[in-house]
Image 1: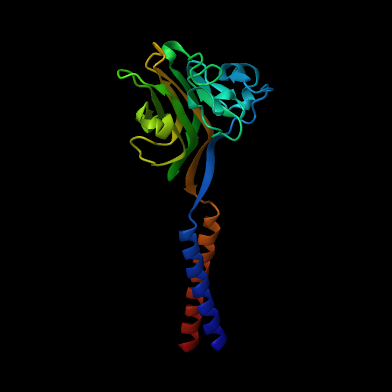
Image 2 (image 1 turned 120 degrees about the vertical axis):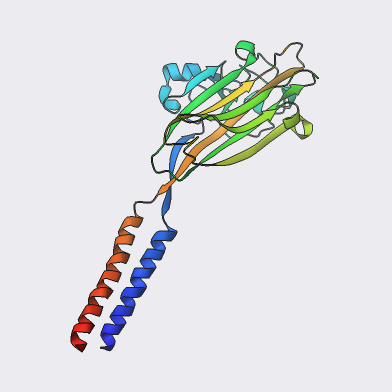
Length: 267
């Protein structure tokens, strides 16, 4: 009798414990998009530049599948590129530790040849939000710098999600306000976006980076953006918890069976 009671208590503990573990470990993290631009080849000396258009035409596997140029000439550069050093218009101050993506400049330090029609530059990275996702996290490293002494011009960096629902604004930086101390801003930037059926229903999306430059004019306004370590992850229900749930329920069913046996013995 004592052994039966002991086994029953064990069944209760096992069943409740597994059900509790299932509730606590009910989600996992998967990667939807990731790139650090370190796969780019052909950057053999400081100052070498490869445009995204060239990479897509000749080495498309070096960028996320489906990457597209929105405007201008986004390009990849080495860690020791002049724009990452202490040169023209303050540069990025050795902020990047490896290859990085540039918007707004075709070559050389900030203040060199601006990029694209009306000097705007943009790029899009596709990804898919899976059915059942509980939320997504967008992460990237960004540096925004340049010169802006004009009183009537402002440059903007806009980061957005576009997809089946409404456009979601992730981040906006403007010159000269967001240059910070010494006309320089750099930071890790993490943003958490909860899935909302009205805006982030499952489906195909694009993470879009766009630098809108308000005409170089007489040189009073000229900016550039560096990007690296782009990553999007999603929180999804963890399939591995289903066996735990089954085991927990099994323990409770076993307990119910033992109770029926006790009743039969008593009566």
